[in-house]
Image 1 (cartoon, each protein chain N blue to C red):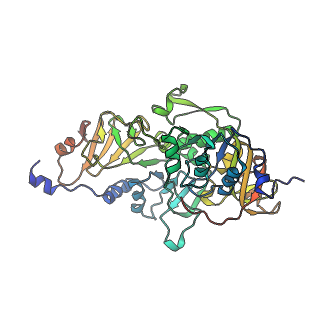
Image 2 (image 1 turned 30 degrees about the horizontal axis):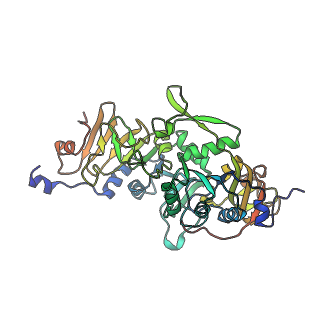
Image 3 (image 1 turned 135 degrees about the horizontal axis):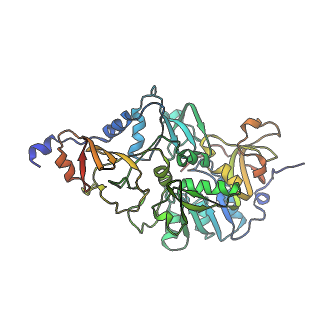
Length: 221
Length: 227
């Protein structure tokens, strides 16, 4: 890559990634947003487009964070942050909340990930086989149970290692589950052909994107 | 006259045996029966297996019970917390056993126990470390693994309202695991913020019918805090 190309290359910010994903969520979908960058997506879905957000701890119809003087101490999300409930929202117990997930009632779940493979495998809960205290939470239920799974993550690790791979090396959360990946460099569908690139960050060529991706990329035909 | 309301913590905790499986409600600090955990610490039962979404925070409550060496095994989905120091120290030292369970499987295992279902097939965990050693079965073109029901000898529950028959309501996200723990436990102990006269809880609003509850203690501590 030449110096000119480097200067021209602008990765998407986290806000832009969230905005990009939010634009693809239609009214009427029931959606679970994973902890981390995915939670930003809710900020870019306008209230008048009625998307119903679910949280694992039994909250359906979750609204934005409350003002400091409007906190309800009994109303938190799965990330243990204070949230609000929209008119029409409801509470249920944990088994019903996970029945919504495991019974394929959620239209979409968006998770972060360590690695996604081009067959849709996702690894997002442990970084090695001997993690001292592994913590899975609801990730496996969400990945196996939602009607579709999208991933929102940086395209590479901080050290520049590829996270879009031909085979996950970290322990799997679920096999063959991911349908789409939004990164700071591109939006990529997971298809029977493998990774198909839908769009690329301004100034970055397909070849530059491939150089940062371990698995083979395809252009949308 | 049926009266499940007890007047003291000692009466609430009476009869809990060493080696019991204890199901503990709460998600974060919300709906977590802290007073009952303190009561269990005081009561003295040891060699416990505790199932709870998390594995304790700081040095109080469940973390304190573990720190005192009273917990042989933790069954949970997410042992990390804002301050998991006690669990991590014991785990690294090999002084506590950990069974990691996906959160939905944990909830379903409790509900199954409460409903008399000894085991069930689920897609959660298929193709992962969770599936190792478990029975696999293909049903209608998808692979599932067999998960066992998780029954409690004792269930610790926090309710918002309760009456003397043990009918319960919950507040907002304080419901979480509490209703299914009430179903899944042989001895369900409840701490409640509010006591109501029989008939004063609208039957349409009862979440946990009293059949699932054994003892109720009034603990009006106010709002949860600290995760």
